Amino acid sequence: MTNIDKVFKAMISYYAGDVKQVNHFTKVYGFSKEIGAMEGLNGEAQEILEIAALTHDIGIKNSKIKYQNSNGENQQIEGPLEARKMLEVFSIDECIIERVCWLIAHHHMYNNIDSIDYQILVEADFLVNIFEDGMSLEAIKSVRKKIFKTESGLYILDALFLSNQQ
Image 1 (cartoon, helix red, strand yellow):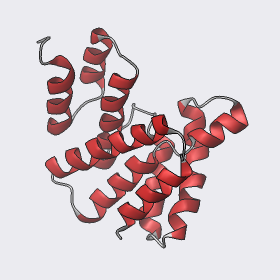
Image 2 (cartoon, rainbow, N blue to C red):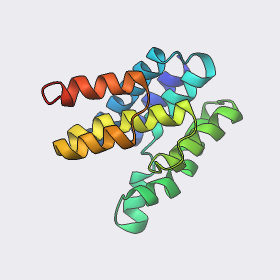
Image 3 (cartoon, rainbow, N blue to C red):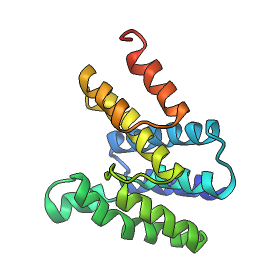
Protein backbone atom coordinates (compact mmCIF):
# COMPACT_ATOMS: atom_id res chain seq x y z
CA MET A 1 0.00 0.00 0.00
CA THR A 2 1.41 3.40 -0.97
CA ASN A 3 1.61 6.40 1.35
CA ILE A 4 -1.27 7.94 -0.62
CA ASP A 5 -3.40 4.83 -0.03
CA LYS A 6 -2.57 4.85 3.68
CA VAL A 7 -3.45 8.54 4.05
CA PHE A 8 -6.68 8.10 2.09
CA LYS A 9 -7.74 5.23 4.33
CA ALA A 10 -6.76 7.18 7.46
CA MET A 11 -8.77 10.21 6.32
CA ILE A 12 -11.81 7.99 5.69
CA SER A 13 -11.48 6.77 9.28
CA TYR A 14 -10.85 10.29 10.60
CA TYR A 15 -14.06 11.57 9.00
CA ALA A 16 -16.08 8.34 9.37
CA GLY A 17 -19.77 9.16 9.17
CA ASP A 18 -19.16 12.60 7.65
CA VAL A 19 -19.99 11.85 4.03
CA LYS A 20 -19.86 15.50 3.01
CA GLN A 21 -16.28 15.92 4.25
CA VAL A 22 -15.11 12.62 2.76
CA ASN A 23 -16.66 13.55 -0.59
CA HIS A 24 -15.01 16.97 -0.45
CA PHE A 25 -11.44 15.80 0.18
CA THR A 26 -11.86 12.95 -2.30
CA LYS A 27 -12.89 15.38 -5.06
CA VAL A 28 -10.07 17.82 -4.21
CA TYR A 29 -7.67 14.89 -4.30
CA GLY A 30 -8.95 13.78 -7.71
CA PHE A 31 -8.61 17.22 -9.25
CA SER A 32 -5.20 17.76 -7.63
CA LYS A 33 -3.89 14.41 -8.83
CA GLU A 34 -4.99 15.02 -12.41
CA ILE A 35 -3.95 18.68 -12.62
CA GLY A 36 -0.58 17.73 -11.15
CA ALA A 37 -0.13 15.00 -13.74
CA MET A 38 -1.25 17.26 -16.62
CA GLU A 39 1.14 19.97 -15.42
CA GLY A 40 4.04 17.50 -15.38
CA LEU A 41 4.54 16.95 -11.64
CA ASN A 42 6.02 13.63 -10.69
CA GLY A 43 7.78 11.85 -7.88
CA GLU A 44 7.95 13.65 -4.57
CA ALA A 45 6.21 16.81 -5.80
CA GLN A 46 3.17 14.79 -6.90
CA GLU A 47 3.16 12.81 -3.66
CA ILE A 48 3.23 16.01 -1.60
CA LEU A 49 0.39 17.47 -3.64
CA GLU A 50 -1.77 14.36 -3.31
CA ILE A 51 -1.20 14.00 0.45
CA ALA A 52 -1.91 17.71 0.94
CA ALA A 53 -5.11 17.40 -1.10
CA LEU A 54 -6.33 14.51 1.05
CA THR A 55 -5.52 16.29 4.32
CA HIS A 56 -6.04 19.97 3.43
CA ASP A 57 -9.20 20.30 5.57
CA ILE A 58 -8.13 18.03 8.43
CA GLY A 59 -8.38 21.03 10.76
CA ILE A 60 -12.15 21.32 10.39
CA LYS A 61 -12.99 18.78 13.10
CA ASN A 62 -10.87 20.44 15.81
CA SER A 63 -11.92 23.92 14.66
CA LYS A 64 -15.55 23.05 15.26
CA ILE A 65 -14.70 21.72 18.73
CA LYS A 66 -12.40 24.58 19.80
CA TYR A 67 -13.98 27.57 18.07
CA GLN A 68 -17.50 26.36 17.21
CA ASN A 69 -16.81 27.11 13.54
CA SER A 70 -14.64 25.82 10.74
CA ASN A 71 -13.59 29.02 9.01
CA GLY A 72 -10.47 28.98 6.88
CA GLU A 73 -8.25 30.71 9.42
CA ASN A 74 -9.11 28.21 12.16
CA GLN A 75 -8.63 25.29 9.76
CA GLN A 76 -5.16 26.57 8.94
CA ILE A 77 -4.31 26.80 12.66
CA GLU A 78 -5.63 23.37 13.64
CA GLY A 79 -4.80 21.39 10.51
CA PRO A 80 -1.01 21.11 10.45
CA LEU A 81 -0.64 19.51 13.89
CA GLU A 82 -3.44 17.04 13.19
CA ALA A 83 -1.92 16.14 9.81
CA ARG A 84 1.54 15.74 11.31
CA LYS A 85 0.22 13.26 13.88
CA MET A 86 -1.40 11.23 11.12
CA LEU A 87 1.53 11.30 8.70
CA GLU A 88 4.19 10.43 11.29
CA VAL A 89 2.39 7.15 11.98
CA PHE A 90 3.17 6.12 8.39
CA SER A 91 6.88 7.06 8.64
CA ILE A 92 6.53 9.54 5.78
CA ASP A 93 9.72 11.52 5.17
CA GLU A 94 9.97 14.63 7.32
CA CYS A 95 10.51 16.89 4.31
CA ILE A 96 7.19 15.68 2.86
CA ILE A 97 5.39 16.15 6.18
CA GLU A 98 6.81 19.67 6.52
CA ARG A 99 5.63 20.69 3.07
CA VAL A 100 2.19 19.13 3.48
CA CYS A 101 1.74 20.92 6.82
CA TRP A 102 2.84 24.20 5.26
CA LEU A 103 0.32 23.78 2.43
CA ILE A 104 -2.46 23.01 4.92
CA ALA A 105 -1.53 26.11 6.91
CA HIS A 106 -1.75 28.32 3.80
CA HIS A 107 -4.42 26.81 1.54
CA HIS A 108 -6.88 29.64 2.27
CA MET A 109 -4.32 32.37 1.54
CA TYR A 110 -4.30 33.48 -2.08
CA ASN A 111 -2.08 36.57 -2.23
CA ASN A 112 1.36 34.98 -2.52
CA ILE A 113 0.96 31.66 -4.27
CA ASP A 114 4.54 30.99 -5.31
CA SER A 115 4.82 27.29 -6.12
CA ILE A 116 3.12 24.78 -8.37
CA ASP A 117 1.93 22.45 -5.59
CA TYR A 118 0.34 25.38 -3.75
CA GLN A 119 -1.26 26.70 -6.95
CA ILE A 120 -2.72 23.33 -7.89
CA LEU A 121 -4.07 22.64 -4.40
CA VAL A 122 -5.84 26.01 -4.34
CA GLU A 123 -7.26 25.50 -7.84
CA ALA A 124 -8.52 21.99 -7.03
CA ASP A 125 -10.14 23.20 -3.82
CA PHE A 126 -11.84 26.02 -5.73
CA LEU A 127 -13.10 23.63 -8.42
CA VAL A 128 -14.86 21.64 -5.73
CA ASN A 129 -16.02 24.64 -3.69
CA ILE A 130 -17.49 26.41 -6.73
CA PHE A 131 -19.89 23.51 -7.16
CA GLU A 132 -20.50 22.71 -3.48
CA ASP A 133 -21.14 26.36 -2.60
CA GLY A 134 -23.24 27.12 -5.68
CA MET A 135 -21.03 30.04 -6.61
CA SER A 136 -22.52 32.64 -8.95
CA LEU A 137 -21.32 33.08 -12.52
CA GLU A 138 -19.78 36.46 -11.66
CA ALA A 139 -17.94 34.97 -8.69
CA ILE A 140 -16.64 32.13 -10.86
CA LYS A 141 -15.34 34.61 -13.43
CA SER A 142 -13.67 36.61 -10.68
CA VAL A 143 -12.01 33.50 -9.21
CA ARG A 144 -10.86 32.52 -12.70
CA LYS A 145 -9.19 35.88 -13.19
CA LYS A 146 -7.69 36.21 -9.70
CA ILE A 147 -6.78 32.65 -8.72
CA PHE A 148 -6.39 30.22 -11.62
CA LYS A 149 -3.01 30.11 -13.36
CA THR A 150 -2.33 26.56 -14.56
CA GLU A 151 -3.35 25.63 -18.07
CA SER A 152 -4.96 22.43 -16.77
CA GLY A 153 -6.88 24.14 -13.98
CA LEU A 154 -8.17 26.79 -16.37
CA TYR A 155 -9.23 24.10 -18.84
CA ILE A 156 -11.21 22.21 -16.19
CA LEU A 157 -12.78 25.38 -14.75
CA ASP A 158 -13.86 26.55 -18.19
CA ALA A 159 -15.20 23.14 -19.21
CA LEU A 160 -17.19 22.65 -16.03
CA PHE A 161 -18.52 26.10 -15.33
CA LEU A 162 -18.00 28.49 -18.23
CA SER A 163 -18.34 26.46 -21.43
CA ASN A 164 -21.80 27.87 -22.16
CA GLN A 165 -20.96 31.37 -20.93
CA GLN A 166 -18.05 32.54 -23.07
